[in-house]
Length: 564
Image 1: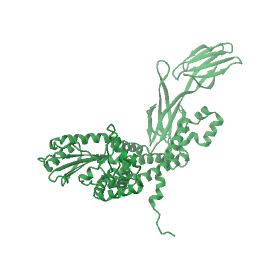
Image 2 (image 1 turned 45 degrees about the horizontal axis):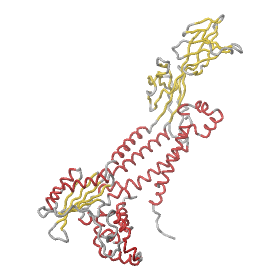
Image 3 (image 1 turned 120 degrees about the horizontal axis):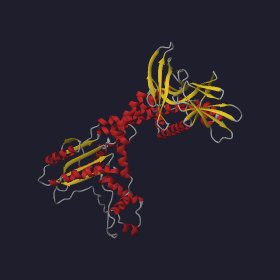
Image 4 (image 1 turned 60 degrees about the vertical axis):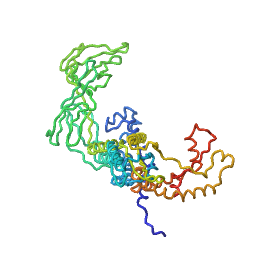
């Protein structure tokens, strides 16, 4: 039996997987779409479900929990799993990278700099001293808002250091967002009730999740008055309701007027004006009171009173301030006929019947919710926005070094190069401008140089390949072993350069030691090209020249550094 201890990182990695995140987000999106398709009881009431889908289907949707899906155990499970996934990803993959912000980049020498993704070499004029050139370059790089360090004829500059915190700050925001949603799901509540003017709404039957640990308030809300404001065309412009918050003994705790998008808030509960209508009308027929239900009919509300099998009286109202219009409708008439108008509290005679319009009772649709996690959600959005802004800052490094030319002692070469995680084209332009600013120090006999492919006399040209055939694998292996010995020093320099790029490649790593992984990937990448592949690449770059020229190219420094 093995005595090895289980790796806790591997145990939690299943919860930090991208596949799990995509699955959870897909299921959550489908759940939200279902909630948008089916009217939710907490927003529009149960009657709207029956009105939309019919009695039988409405009952099934209510029984299955679809009409209140955002309070269902299924939705709470999805939120809980997304929280676990986000916590695992944050603490296993994202937060450890924040420690790399404190890494200090090393100084590099010329060989390592020339192996950077973007680099240039400048042969310095004999009259230009290293100190003068580096001093000028430090000033120019500083103008680009880089943080610059100088030591031993070398320069190390860094830009956008704190932009690397974008992922960390964004994940803090996402975790905060999930925390706010979780708090609301477990302790919040909501509801919708149509309340007739003068009646009281209790919050005791509020909707909340099945797994709930919150507490419902003991106070209630009374609708003291409600009204509708119209445009000149008769369309509704705004709805208003005067509300009173009262305790169990009838004491008024708070009063206020609400309208659409202007709620009344008390004890953490927001009460909104959601709808408005006319509920019933009180009429009197020869002194006999009768309360008649009103139904919406387009822009108006109507009550119906059958007189016989062929005749119906229709009582129509626009709002509580408009007069009551009385229509008669017979089977042989195409449209109802207006008989009379009756103002509130007045009486009209229809033959032997006196009709008195006593009062109409408007009804106010009140929607309320308690969202304890809302302040956390607002804070979360602040973190997310900050993370998005930081993500737009490119993280860049520039290195420069003045070294003596090995082939011509006494002459000096300035090597300048660097790397940018984002906006690489802009970084290349920046480096080009820096090189142009150094024109005054350049030896006019030598042009600005870029990293060159080193020639290898043993590599065959395309014509030789066609004539002699492909070299054997053993021959290629021998050539590569020879390059190993010749390029050992270059490999060490390449490792220095790759080590300097640890911090840059940390974003691609999966833990706090991601810098080492990035360095290894850089070395492995250089191994992936054979000499023949590099020959083909060189041929592409020389397209347009004579096809029968003798070109011999090899991986040179890059191959030797990869093999080392």
